[in-house]
Image (tube, rainbow, N blue to C red):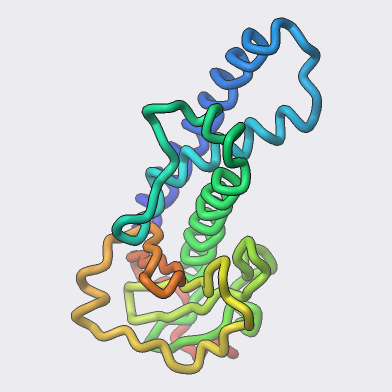
Length: 202
């Protein structure tokens, strides 16, 4: 339900806030009192988002998640690009869950698939993923699936044909983002239909 999504996002936001505070204290101690720059805070925000991605993103089997045993700060120092990529997964989850909330709130109901940047009812924010691709939105009554082409996509998706069977849809976890073997990302959300019973362009 949409309430679950809001509670999860609130929990993640609080967790990120706490991580930023703890990491900030550690960085101050670690750098022996050096003045914190804007770049340092941006680094901490990236690290916190990367850690949050462990909670909200289900990665491909065998794909490495942010490491806990060695410490995320050490991981960032050794491979900042990997940690930044994990942070973008967390951003994609937040944008997708916010878009799903907007669809539940503003409709339209029914069964359809549409590109988010072509939907009149999607609102102005959260229409694209962190890599600049418009989300695809698939609605099946009280379930909304938000799809991202993912970081490796070369082109904007057409969103005309989303091969997702009802049996597959029923098995998807709710309000978590899944990374598929092809590198696309999808989030399935469930809530009460509230919008008008119109088509996605109405």
